[in-house]
Length: 261
Image (cartoon, rainbow, N blue to C red; front, side):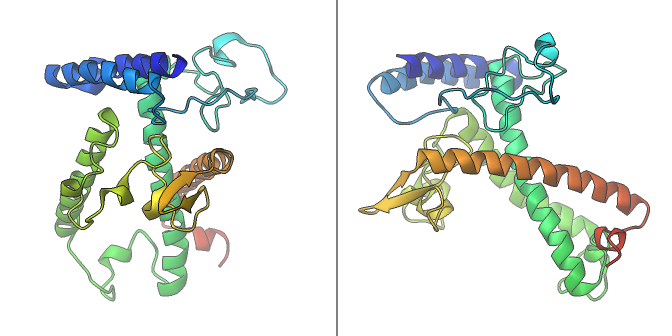
């Protein structure tokens, strides 16, 4: 019953005009709420958001435990990985906004971690600053800015549109027609049950957060929770690092140059 009410509450929160968009999308969400709530009550393992027991929440200001909603906002209960109660602007009061911002934080953090590694390795290998690499005459495949922008909009637009649809209707994109290069939808199924953490044979081939039992991926909840916390911490550091890289690039400097390498 708790999981059923949680799923219904999340879906109701998502039905805000900002996130659900059209009237048709909102009606789809309302229709889905009843079905998902009943499946949860029947014992379905699928979850829309982390519903694990909330651990004791740490303060984002060391040695400060009080301070009302500025220090310890009531809408953050510690159930999200890396939740230290930091929301001074109250952006996560609405459950739909909170879920959307966490999804955005994960996506941006993962891109930032990839970018930081690429910037260091790329410059160490080629000697070309990362903000000049695309225009360097010696690049492996030099393209104009317009070509790069058009290609990115086309490819990323397709992927992001599918992620947008899956955000409102979880696992709706893990079907064969949605991924034409895969003949088995199970490779892209949300095997962990937590949106944003697909796992499974395709996304966790080394079995860091689960194991394969008779060809079926079974997540290890304890390992998965530790990895979620580690990932969000590294993601936040990477996003801060990228912000510093941008400031350095504005001055014509590079990360390796700043380190004297």
